[in-house]
Image: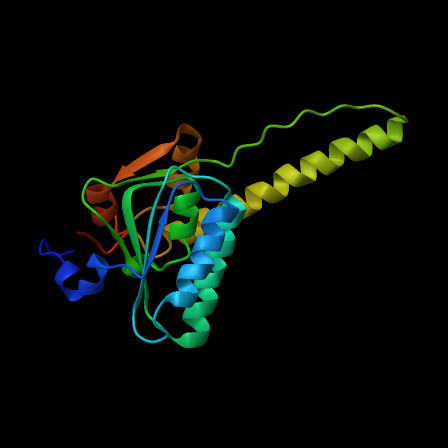
Length: 190
């Protein structure tokens, strides 16, 4: 990639249409929906986010809304990560093609495995105990599949291999903006 910045080609990055900050949760989703509705209906749309993480399913939901908007309106939609794009923020970022992603200087992305905290209480007939255990196992297996789909989307078209993400995610993998650019996880740092 050339050393010169692509930011001048995208002057809208200085004034995003949608600003998201804080935990990825239902309140962020509501704000996202309201800001999308208030944004111009034509032209490039810029969505900026800064987050320490949150609910990965809300991130996937917002990402799916971006995909639908892109597919059905044929609009260019740009991602701008500011300061921190952690956890569910990286899940949201995965909804954007890598050539539509930007980070501000000094921003970090953090990728990790999904977390689960669950207590199993087995009580009752033995067969129902087996069903409870199987249900929990299926929940974990399905969550791993969803996580891996997200990892694949995140690194599609980049110089990062899916296996590397799987190896590094358990340790909370922090990727600074410059490394993200070099590895083509984003188009540019602005």
